[in-house]
Length: 138
Image 1 (spheres, rainbow, N blue to C red):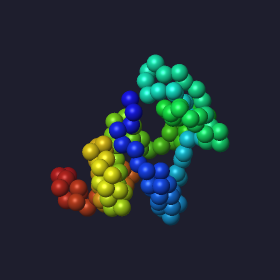
Image 2: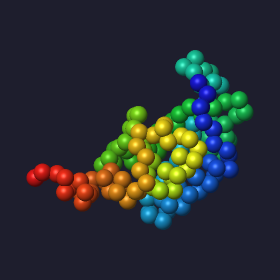
Image 3: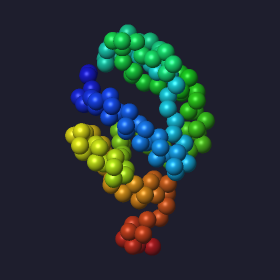
Image 4: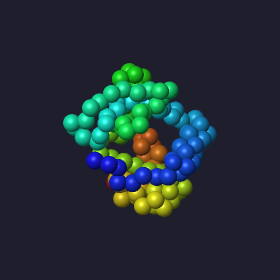
């Protein structure tokens, strides 16, 4: 299955740089895959291969998943995590990010779109939010 939305490559670069800069400014660890499982089509019947960031993905092939080196790199990090978002939940938080996904018509692909990144991140980190606390019965 082909992706239904493709962002222009210059937009991908801008979004990536924005996210990396924001993560650095907040001292958030931003982890990227170092290798990938590749396939010659988006299908369970695809011929599969392997590629690294340095090699790049061959023309006509697609990145399908993280590769074994990336899995090993992430195992300890995942084991030590307090909160893990996994599966079908997709979240975007922050005013600028919400504007970008809206502009490109892909907001419907997210389970939750928040323009308030501070509150969203606080909730994910287990912090008590004043509005939620006021509604809660103790």
